[in-house]
Structures are given as structure tokens and as C-alpha cells.
Length: 162
Image (tube, rainbow, N blue to C red; front, side):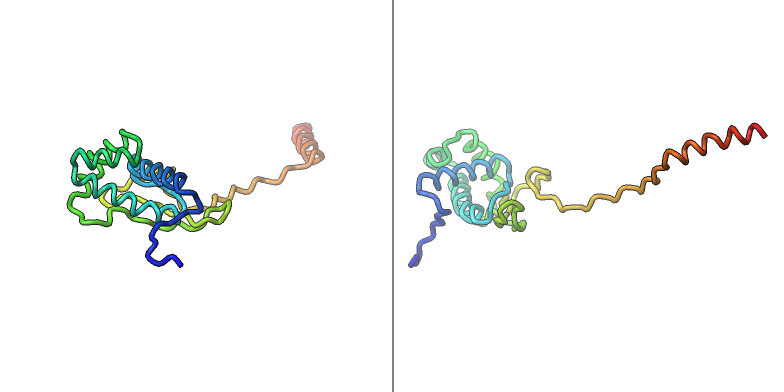
């Protein structure tokens, strides 16, 4: 039984799972919102919120811990300069997960995870747009047969002759 075991394994070994979560956290920090599966979003939320809590302390030790986890200095810089100051007045709950429905290819449940305190970033790549039905095309006139075309061409000539 998994009593009090909070780690979501995501069907991966430990090293692969840590790399996956670090890469997802970097993408979330860089883009502000990402679209992923619901299970990965649920696993990412506590990791991202702990990173923001570390970044709010804004000391050398917390910066080194963030670099050790994320392994990308540009993401750590953005975390400490943009994300953490935006969440300074909040005690927790820095992320929001929104369910999107199922992915078409494999029916995996999809979700968007985003920062609560940052302004919404409207982008077609990050948000699944509502599917609109295409407008029906105007009906094209039926094609006239070759015999009718020939008959129409001959009628004006016959009318002029009269």
C-alpha cells in the first residue's frame, strides 16, 4: 500500500522522472503556461511551487538549489527576477491547472498548467482553441453539358439572322 507516499511515478524510473519534471518546470518558467497531460501537470505543480517558494527567499543558497534542480541558468534567472516577485504577496498556490479534455490520438487527459499571478498569455500554441465548424461553401451552379453550351452559342447567331 502507498500510505503517505506522495511521489507520482509517471511510469518512469527516478532519473528519467526528475529530468522530465525539471524540463517541464523550465518550460513553465519560460513560457508562463504549458499544455501537457493531466498526470504530468499534477506531478509538476508541487515541484514548481517549491521552486517559487525558494525563489522568494532570494538568497545565494536558494539560487544554487534551483540551479542544481533545473540545470538551466536562464530559467533560474527568470524564476528569480520575474516569477517570484509576481508571487510575492501570495502564501502558496502559485499554479493553476485547467483540464482540457482528451487528446485525439491516444485519448490521454490533457491540461494547461499556468502561473496564477502572471497576466494571461494568449497564444494559439499554448491554448487549445475551440473547434469551429467551417462555413459551408456557397453552392456552385451545376455545370452545363457540352450540348447545351453549343446550343446557346448557336441561338444568338440564329437570332441575328432573322
